[in-house]
Length: 83
Image (cartoon, rainbow, N blue to C red):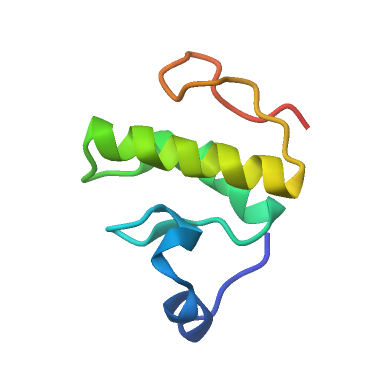
């Protein structure tokens, strides 16, 4: 996965993160989308409502970057990626 420098991460708009308020899990390319999906359950300090909103943003980014997702909702036991 491509690493973001602190400067590049700070330059991203809030909408380019799965968790906007916390600025966690950037969604700027396919590798970052895959990482956000894989690490989704590890994100701490967020509510279920924030997870719902983050999952919608991840789905949109996955579609944009051609990442096939296994689950439609983050609460599904097999949430993850197919490719």
